[in-house]
Amino acid sequence: MEEFLDSLSDRHTQKVVWVLRLIERIEIVPQQYLKKLVGTEDLWEVRAQIGSNTYRLLGFFDGLRLLILTGGFVKKQQRIPVREIELAHQRRIEYLERRSRS
Image (cartoon, rainbow, N blue to C red):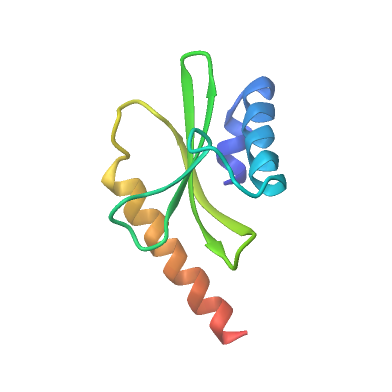
């Protein structure tokens, strides 16, 4: 996740961080910023848009308030690439396994 954010310009990183803080601070987040991915087991999509650039971050919740981000990418098509969903799902499984061992 850090690599993805480092790859963005400062202005675009600030927008992504603004959206993440919004999600953290308000109880009911508009779908334009946070949306559950249909057909997945508890994966969510965070969206940040600046001009014609749309950034998507995938993740899942651990409890009610902790959003674990699994990766990010620039939106180039309407659908989320299957590879990104599979990666997010695998990282969720790994996270939950590590958490259950500790």
